[in-house]
Length: 478
Image (cartoon, rainbow, N blue to C red):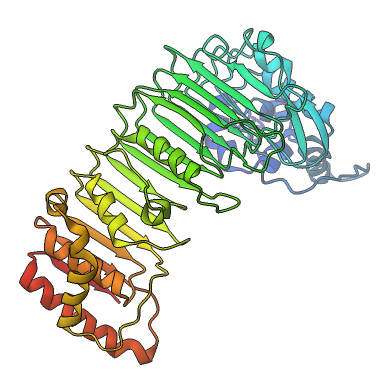
């Protein structure tokens, strides 16, 4: 590096640390930054104080240092010694201690280079500068300190993400994530907690706004009592195949919750979700491992979804065909619901169940359906009389006073539309009875060349029916 001018003065090295960090080091990868430590004594430790050290660009793990090289070669090898060597647990702990001693603010550790277990670094608890902590490993297991020790630190932490934690010795975390241990925590992400069966998260007046739980397959009991919680996501948890499985219990008290995503492999058997009066959006999907639609599961699902009766937007993901197929399925009225989306590819629907679902949503304005129906009765030759016959025979007898429940519906989007009696009947039913309908979007998949003319004829008859029965505009994506 040509750091000196004609007067022999090293003006770059005379720059303040913050200028060197923001104007020089910020633009370089970490390996180049470390190489610059060989330039002079001034630069030897300067990279240590760089506020953002990203080691993800380093590929070399095994380095052999030899003597007799040029200054440039020795600088490159020195960098490899610092950031490219194989890490043992003790060396990783040493790096973390080094970061803590320099008042680290944001620490992310993603370990994939050794097996075994790694005790949670105790010195992190006393790091008053730490605001964001991310610990993740796919090959080792982090071990957490005791709840009593946790209450000694993390006073400034606002974001915490933990993945690969081993709890085989103690499967319960009921008093770990509390306001006393994390008084300023805003975001909490827990992933792949091995052996975790009981989880409790409590904050009555703290700053915790977002919770994400993913891959906790052995979880049986979840209790969340967070006064200011805004977003909650539970995914890939509550595995029904776990041995010695007790009843799956969920209790949530979050009066400020606005968004919830629930994508798990089983339906809670005992559920109490209170005071979700602020809920705006809910996404619910199940992927049961046995696909048995028992009456008990249907009742549990009905009770679970009934907890979201105040939400404005609801998406029913995988397994939502319980509503569209299971006879006797009852859904608590969703009196505030304005947007309903149904996404499923696992089964069938019948018109009576679908109308019953509409009846539960009297304020519905937007309906999005993506249903791959098994009820596929092919029509060889479409005409307007067949459309009327389908409407009168398959939909009108189920209608009762359904027009009263469709009076606010303005937008309908149907994906995976097929030239079947059910799909065509649904379209004409909505065109006739949704008096406020403004737009209908029909999207279909691949069409064989031999069926193209028949599809065009169906499109023409649907347009003709729309002109007579509705003021809506139909958009075709065939």
